[in-house]
Length: 321
Image (cartoon, rainbow, N blue to C red; front, side, top):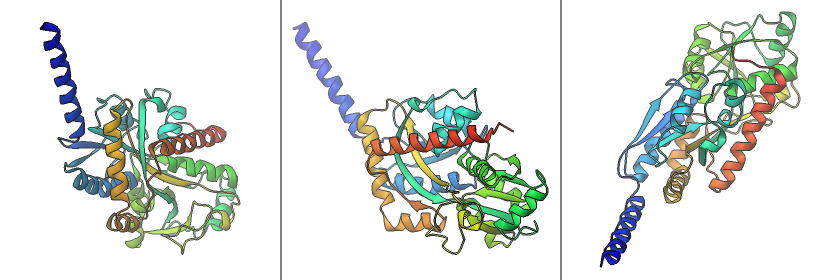
């Protein structure tokens, strides 16, 4: 009788666990952003988070944990319970630049489960309206005449935006001075205020400054003109042949979350990212919705992009400023 009771208890426990897993989510989900409000990460998190929350039937709470080039936010998620209720929105730096520049970063790619890519887009090379810089060719000429004179802002050392800048300096053979901020929002605000001459940034963070007439866009970072911003030339066609950097944002969970929970998050994300309204909302921010074909495909993509970011940083000799 005791064996029978024990067996029944085990079956009930397993059945309860299956029901709990199948009911995911039963409470709000926290989406961590490793930068200050106002930048590309934060903007995409809020647009995507609202849509995902509606699909899952639970609120998605966006939490900004800025610091150390987004590593503080990433570390907090890596150390969170692996239950699907704490997620991270991040880019290529998570699997490359962070570990190269921040030797104290206490996480590795194995600490995360990539769920899906959310969006992909070119970055923008922009200048303050009063910087005196009128084109990429003009920037190159003046920077070569006065090495280190012109400074640029980014959303943090080690981020994909920092990678874009160091790759630009490497290929163009110019020296610019890096001024890192805690996110794309503060970085673009500094550009608009004239605290820096130029910036590499997401469209979401800098477009409001362009609309306000405080910032001019010189070029995009992709190899070909970006379909959402076709009027802007590429850096490659503007005097730096071979230059090609694009940014992506993706969702990551702590490793070892239940497979059914991961699949639920993936399926819900792909569904909302294929919705015309969400695509339109992201496009207005300068981001192209780009859900991954599978979680395995996204993992391979994220690892490849992360390794490329780390290689470019190492090649440039970049250090934490």
